Length: 187
Image 1 (cartoon, rainbow, N blue to C red):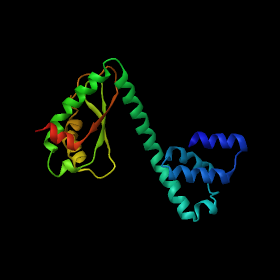
Image 2: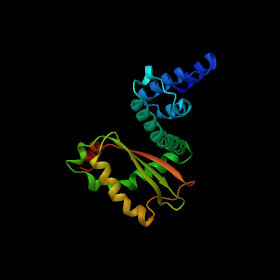
Image 3: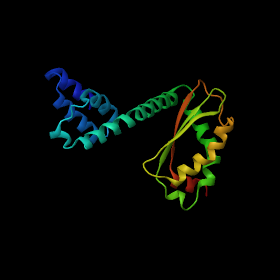
Image 4: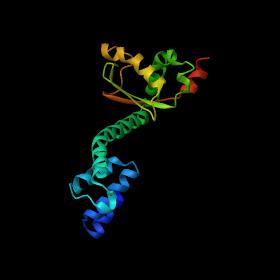
């Protein structure tokens, strides 16, 4: 999205009308990182043909402004975790983190929780094996995710060493959780 907008802008010059359309398309495509600087460029010069009402424009602008920084952090975390996984010993370290998380996952395997959709845990590990950040990415309110995070949170607060010492710190790990697979594995 951003590359296409930049190419059009380069070829035809800067236009608030094209910027309004590009911001609209970026929002519709859920590319809020691309939309956010477009909204800043638009300022108060929103186009009624694109947005219909000023309220609709402002809702989308404010949403992009709120979400873009968070999405950028998630993108960077995913990249760091991917780089870590590809590094020497990265897959083994990832597997060890997954194995150690099982003690927090097993108590959450209940009939209600296994109906939850798949999700991802974002774990950042400090130089001493403690959790320095913990987050969840899920498409819905997820009982299994809440249960696991509730189980991990006291260890996070107490700065307990849950994981082996990583090769560098902070060390990003993304763990895929499939509640249905956990049920099968816990039998």
